[in-house]
Amino acid sequence: MEFVLDPPHGVGPLRLGMTAEQARAALETLGPLSATAYGELALHRASGLGFSVGFGVGPTRDRVNAIEIWRPREDDVVLFRDVDVFGLPALEVAARIGRHLEILPQDDGFASRDPYLALWRPFAADDDPDETEGYFFQSVLIARPGYDDTPAEAEARLAAGGEPGY
Figure 1 (spheres, rainbow, N blue to C red):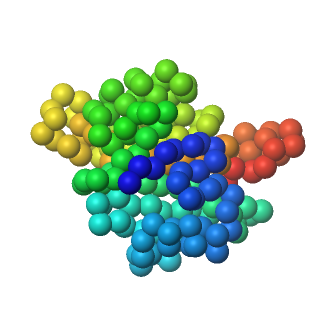
Figure 2 (cartoon, rainbow, N blue to C red; figure 1 turned 30 degrees about the horizontal axis):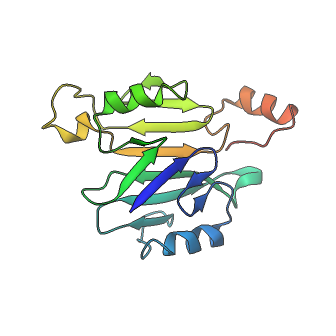
């Protein structure tokens, strides 16, 4: 199955800003929900592709604030503007996405703040395709604008009439 990342809106049937009930129903269209240690909404498909949704705090606590997707072993494909985020080498994915978004390197990944899209791998092993956990991204997160705002940035966002990202 193909899933298209559409930040800041969502991926597949999951949309940022959904209620918990809406997110549960959307996830259930993809397969049975998985139990988690902290009671989050999560799903793991037979391909290994995983989804989880996070909720905000304060005024956004009842709304989907972030959607994380984990790399499948087979079959399922996750795309951002025709870039296979899990099927291509991490540095190639970052370069291709960088044609569309301002994406900056972070410790073990890359992130764009507007729209919010973060790619992660447990360590950077850029030149060894046999080391799949570092050569390929292992997860991608999309989130509401302001997801990682500092307190000052969040205050400025609210003062400008925006919604808090947390």
